[in-house]
Length: 220
Image 1: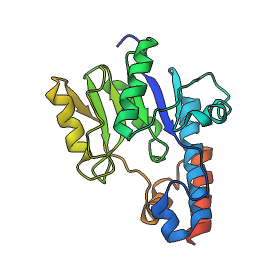
Image 2: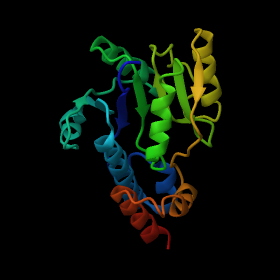
Image 3: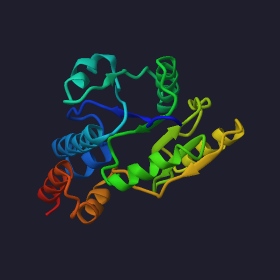
Image 4: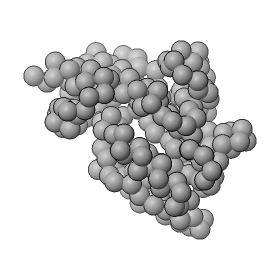
């Protein structure tokens, strides 16, 4: 790898009643919207700090203009296609490789515990392997990187505890070397918010502190 990987952030426009449904079921639709917005701000904070190239990938082409106004820094906006997450990943991966990107790191907007040191760990793995993953506690992943095109991903069991295992198997079946960073967490439930009260308490990044304040106002 001769240059830093391109960071690709899959994002959804926060809207009431859409996304974070398990949080909404516990705390209500408006609190879930507030959390989704604060989580997006954390991912955008990471985007502003990313030392390499950046792509924002909104869930819908209708949100391309919205995504284009989210950041102060230069970035490309490449909307996702229809289909499940695997199909979207294959689609964006193929498009960006046609534009000349060779090393790609994909994240979503639900892992605010990604620290600066965690990102540096991920960057370092790009020099050692074909594919890399940050395992999530629920069996999924919070980040996934590739120096080679992803294998076919649309048939994998997305949003299930089996995903991480099957994702690795799909890569290894194509002969790709796989490596792992330290594990992390994503945010799906009110219990995850309670964990964040502890884990990001001393994280000085402004968006993390704003997320912490929002969580404390909802849970305390």
